[in-house]
Image (cartoon, rainbow over all chains, first blue to last red):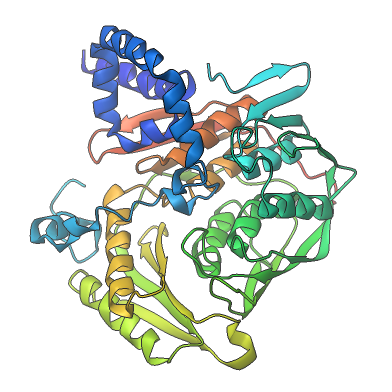
Length: 111
Length: 365
């Protein structure tokens, strides 16, 4: 059963990337595992939301086009680096959480 | 399937000005004709921007026999790629985008030319939109080494130029290869050292020291081996605008590299930039993987171009840019990656079989 679960996951991530209408920004902004859950659970919900979107279809396009030179649509790899939520690195717990990524970290963990 | 792509005959169609560079580069490598429409067609100021036109001109310089048709309004491009020639090329990158915008995609073409690339670019070397020359030199070029592109690879920053007026100059040399090597890079290791470059132009050299101090204050808690060079350019070599920037690189025991960089905007202090860059680096490290988010695309592309053998790499979170890159790689080369998520440390294992790209201009000796 465990094996099956993982194979399903793999296909899901590939599906998410290769056969999905979501924009790359939407996929990248969410935690991948969370997106998969949402995907599986709420196909029905999506339909409802889509209908809602349709009503304001033209408005949405307009607002997107207006700021089409904003950072999100710049053709740059660096634009996707998130500089907005760096405050969490002032927190001692977050700082300690990556201790084991360094050679100075403890050796007896699994990461 | 994605709806902004429909292949009619041999022409691949895309729409939108986003991801323009990668589509042109992939078209050049795969030899496919590509049509890009709806370039800011709804915008008040429609069509190509000057830097995009400049990139098209540059692409014409490094290839032979390619034709680019742009419609009157500049909203549609039809690009028929020729062969990659390379050689000694000079290009003025202007000041609307930094040199990184132009050099970054060309790195993927450079190993497959007829003659070794010898590029001289003029413009902005460090800014906050495009990858800086320091990061290209210390991280991006090292990604190529893993694929067997090694001797003669060089990037020299002869002059620095900060935004907005630029005035920097760089020289990039890349050797030719016939084929790439496949990679198996799934062990991320642990960080053993951190290096960096703090540079400043047309401001007091003291600013560079302040950058170093503030970055070290964040990073020294993890590891003592933090060394940040200060790189102060003076006079003619420091471009036309004042500015300072910091680029940091963390290296792991297995040779994985993670980069972070920031350039100062008007009004920001060196202390802000220093700690911001250091935190960005920590952010990058927390994602894990063997390739940092700035260079995911290059590694994945070179894996696709590699020999018909399995290449594997471990990456942290995929960025939006990379996701679109994966989609474009599928459209141009019909290669899809096997992506497996590793729940243990939240990374992704990506594997693919290369297309066996061969550079026939390079003789086997």
